[in-house]
Image (cartoon, rainbow over all chains, first blue to last red; front, side, top):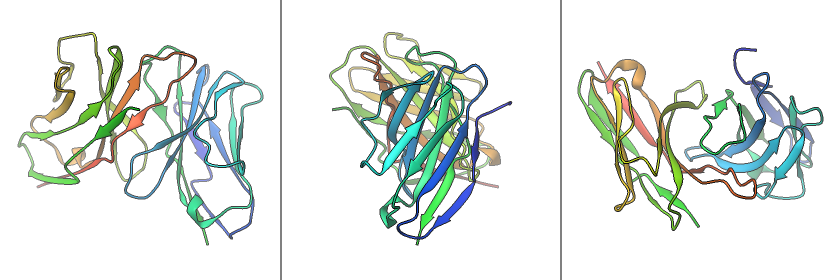
Length: 115
Length: 117
């Protein structure tokens, strides 16, 4: 596709439910990132993939958060037993190479609201 | 640890005016990258401009330019001839030279820029 696509655009979950957020990066992009953006704040790093390998997951806030990219393209961020503090916009970004400074291309994000 | 500070929560200027957004950062690294991103209401982060720390020349992209002061750890964004479409949140971000697959972007809290007609 022309850009990074994320779905769903909005998700409302009841506390305790599991959710899955999808990211479809730009075709051929090696690197994929997930960020969490709370209301009125800058994004916070969650995890990074180089192709199918998850090289950095140091930003995942708890073991309820899990991300995968099994074939090195589409990625899914899963949150188990959602809590109210998980409410945020989840941004996905991809870049062509794994070189530092390579521009990131972002999707429109998924706004998760946990009630 | 690296930090990025944007001290202006909100700014407002008239269309066609010039506006400068400030950003300071703290790092002990010597090689790194600095970015300005724009986030309109659509939520998509759009890269505005990028600066590599080893380059002394300030980056420019059309109406957007930066004033990079490495010693002062300052990285301000100047928008000339501002347009209504520039209305958005602007985020300053830092990335150290990646090692051990560390490609984290460290973000400031953002500045809300409003361009008035």
